[in-house]
Length: 496
Ligand code: NAI
Ligand code: MG
Image 1: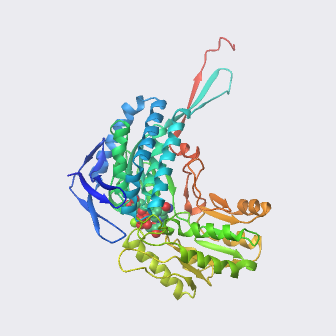
Image 2: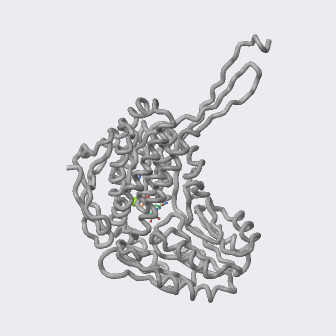
């Protein structure tokens, strides 16, 4: 059996594929293994899905290789674009079901899940638009030479995605890879395999040839590691923890030196100056840390507020955080659902304990909510020092630290006091402060008077240990193409 009927409170009954999606069919794994998918809202088992092991990765990679060397290579760029746009349309047509499955499996609030589906469709359509605009150039060197530079696809791309934005990461990875003419083997996170399999049905419906996009469920250490070290995978793109990012790079180095792009963790500073519009700043600081339950690589987890407004800010921020509606992800009003898994819940509670022991003060939150499901109160720690673990390490939950600074210079210094460099934000009404501080912060994205407002047209990725390469925007095309220089010696009749 490679599909079952399931029900969500939002969209009713639907057909949930459970197989590995290889060559446009849902199949069982060679070893016949399955694993359970847990509902983080009530800790029940939703269903079991088939698990990919090394042998299945081999099968998926050879399907992708065959498609790359065969039918896909012969498709026109215009046709590749058309298929991606069709896929985007299908995401929109099926958005209620996709969003409901995302909420069921991940625990994210349904309103947020709908936003993710809309953004995934936007991203796929955007890269559909790029497919026939990937152009090379002609370079004159000597008069008797004709040189052109082509941008060619890389080949078979292995893509490993996390559980915090399953469908969105699916689109960020598949959109540019396919637009550029590559084929794909994508592995979902073991915590959240369901929405990607529902979306896989749409791949077939959109008309992609078999083998172009293959989606597998499986564990990092088995299926993920098999992709990263595979001798016939030409490129690997990974989003997840910095620890695993390093392992992926090592696996690439130890196998066929496949190209590597990494989108890793963060510990992003959210800096509020005394001249900021306070109400606006509080909204964005709140959204910066608590959006997606704090499970964002770019979460604004370190809040720094200028001394003169600190007391007022903290009172208002506390009040704001306490108003966030935490609960059943299927209630339309819910802002924050459960954390994704028992493991993530335990990690976050561990950080909260660690912060308390280190002498930080809990301004609000710090506790579990209820006794079923992985719910954690929105938490603010004050009285922190820069050397504390809760200030230095990525918590990946609804927990932030807050402290004061005096000057612009100090704000930049503490803002940059991290090995990460994914994102940062500045809140100010002074244009000079906004630009000077943005320029001085070592981060791939800096938001001014806003937060977490990513857009598929804008490159996203990390400085320092937050990653390698940029996703989204035109920049992502560089990850999925390689240049070929063709240099032709001409006869010398005209130049003799
Ligand atoms: P993880 O890095 O272990 O998992 C992310 C993906 O990598 C999953 O698909 C997983 O199966 C795969 N993976 C794991 N080990 C692998 C290996 N050896 N080779 C190849 N693939 C492998 O992250 P995890 O354990 O789920 O979360 C741990 C922490 O990582 C979080 O608390 C958070 O700090 C960070 N994280 C960051 C994300 C981001 O968006 N940058 C997303 C998820 C987690
Ligand atoms: Mg893991």
